[in-house]
Length: 89
Image (cartoon, rainbow, N blue to C red; front, side, top):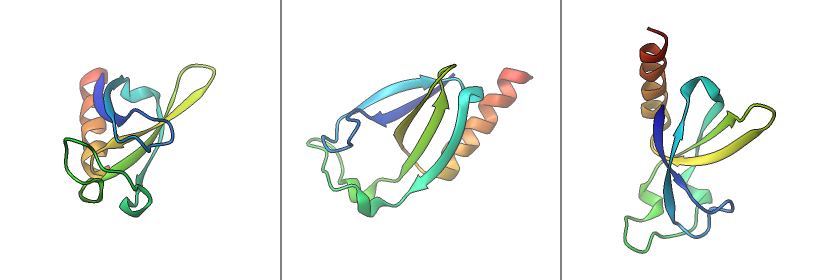
């Protein structure tokens, strides 16, 4: 399982985050998001303009869900690849 910090609000306006564990094999797509579209500030954290975001779509069986994870796209991709290697030996 891959543990990610994701934005809690579906409209990404509150700035609150939560942790989500995702099976790497259930990830359908990932894409980096430009910082300019996020116009919120975390009350006790760094400015959102200094953060990097990655949109992740994953499968829940008969439906998909999309979340926005905090983190660099390339670093998250590498974590997913290394997690899949551990899962599949």
